[in-house]
Image 1 (cartoon, rainbow, N blue to C red):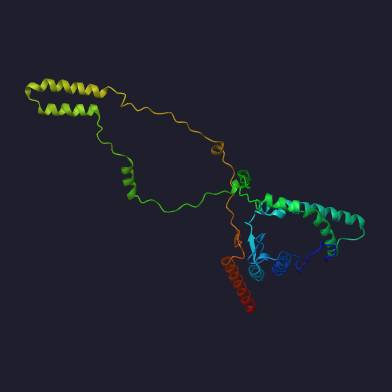
Image 2: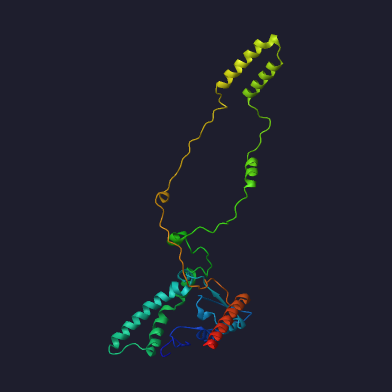
Amino acid sequence: MLHGTPAGSKGGASPSGWKNTQLFLPVLQHFVQNERPSKEHPKLIILDNHESHLGIAALNFAKRNGILLLTLPPHCSHKLQPLDLAVFGPFKKYYGASCDRWMVNHAEKPITIYDIGSLVGEAFLQAFTPKNICSGFRAAGIEPFNDLIFSHEEFLSSYVTDRPGKTSEEEVPQSGSSQDTSLSKPIQHGMTDPVLSQFQLSQYQESQAGPSQAESSSTAKLQTEKSQTKPTLSSIEIKKPTLQIITPEQIRPHPKAGERKSTIRRKKGRSLILTDTPVKENIEEEARLREEKAHKKKQNN
């Protein structure tokens, strides 16, 4: 199966044809043989959250040999995985061209598993070049580090599924609302209405006036009434014009997708350091619970 592959290659196979936890451990062993990591000089491996990378034996081996396993956030490999950005594309093109040439030269034969090694080896040398590999790390913002690779425009496609965050259901007590309202208006000291002061003064003079002062009191009262009916500049409230802007979205909002009601209780993935002690212990506990559940199910059957 490894005939024609690049020098130093290592292969593995599974009954299902997919990679699993049993195949990931030999990959790490092959990595240690060639890179020689240690706890004093650790090596970083960036990978996705595939379940084949979560085997307990592989995690323990990586931790003992100074390998840091860092997983990417879900649904971000098209922006953060260097292989997807600059290597797998050329590799797919060169591998397809190699298969086309092979089928032209062997028209009477199909491609078998024993022919894939040489076809992969030819495409591998053309795609996995230092230039492409460095370009992938640069485009992903890993080396050199760049945390601004995501622009605002790239999030517009998810606008239809955006939903407001959950708000607290606690309401403000009604007893405190009146107090807040009363305190929100400041009390202005030393400011009185001049017309009101004159009217109060005239009333005071009228109450204190004798028979000889009746005529003067009535005259002052008449002048006060006239002054009250005549508007002053200070009493006129000038309203400022307000400008109300209505956006097209308010007239016809963008379509919004309904909430997904999935019955699949799958744990959401996130970026993790798999070799970190708390994370590794959680993975070990989950694996232990799965084994106990499978063992009980086997006993019941």
